[in-house]
Length: 298
Image (cartoon, one colour):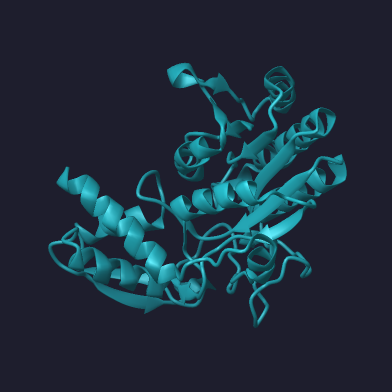
């Protein structure tokens, strides 16, 4: 299997470099092509089609995205170029070359008003530019005629990059008290597990194009997530002391972009179609922090 990985330097992309190796020949593409990698410039969507036609992969995994949720509110042109126009060009090239496209989307395509986990076919209603741009990317892929697997994930974090987990650990080193939003709910999902699940999905085979929710099991608030980070990181010796984590409301922490208050995703379809069960979010957190602790001891 020849796999073209786009966005190889992102949180999920870095983990995919590891997880996809067992499946065949992996060609990594990044924005600047450092280290001898191919160049994938998402600010030039049509260049991506040329890249795909040159490499002629069996599978394209698109892990690149514009993810600056707040900045997108005033930078919509760039958000739509990277999250919608680029996936459209990628999908059209995949259709011409009969390549399978694996593409990641987001819980932010929903408005957060549900009272139960979202199903893949529930009505979408993004609250901001970021979610709207990701939804437009989904729709372009579906309209392209390409074989595809759209994987919606949420609250992604890793032992590297910029994310909520590492921000909380950094702040915990400087403060005795943290104030974290307690009225937004989701399922924190490690990039490492997303990558492993993607490899398992490809190994199983995608019989029909579709959309699947790809998150951990269970749910928590950002406050609950932060509290667990403090508890587990302290137990592993990553923090010399545990700050107090105080709950606040979304209104107490205004941001340019509105977030969905509830964006838990139902993974029943994923489990049925591919035969694997996502871990509980707490287990994913423990595994990621354990990885961080090992790095710190090396």
